[in-house]
Image 1 (cartoon, chains in turn yellow, brown):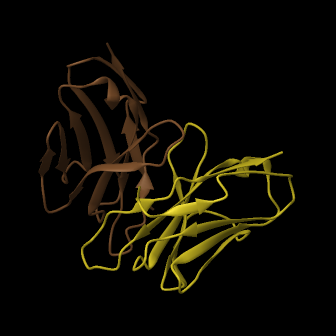
Image 2 (cartoon, chains in turn green, cyan; image 1 turned 30 degrees about the vertical axis):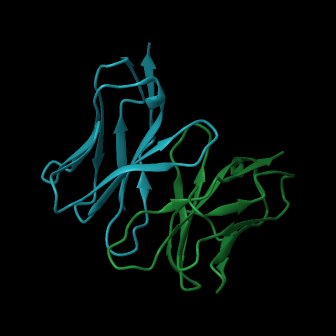
Length: 114
Length: 112
């Protein structure tokens, strides 16, 4: 166990709808990243938050947005869902200590858009 | 931006033999290179990582080598066992943000 939990584990949405995925990190992990992993592919970096501010973004459109809260939880919001958004969404958190680089992953949320 | 290529996409080896997976990266500023193992339906798990100031790192049956000049790094698994069967991903990041750019993955199959 990594101490990082995601909810829900599975979700089915209709094209055009909006979805919110949640991630709860370990206490003290104030850096959280979100990744999208399509079936049979490697994870793609969506964005990263540090102390409640976005400090890095991958090649994803603005309809992918996020929030990070003081209690080490975070959200990924996706608006206007498209069929290609179907994927496993992973969050990963890291502790604040200088030089610690390992990212601890949650179990993921499997999103299916129909 | 950074691009990470991983080969092969599928690797089948006899139990007890060694397996080698290779990755190349494009951004010479990348300085952190982790390897993850992902079993079907599960989260990626870090198995070994290396920083750019080190050329090789070993942990029991697993080792990683880094060639900064050629911009490639490799995962070596010796004495493979059935439980090593999984998809392995390499990744690279740079700076202090550690935003990981991933390879496409290698499906490792251990034949009994």
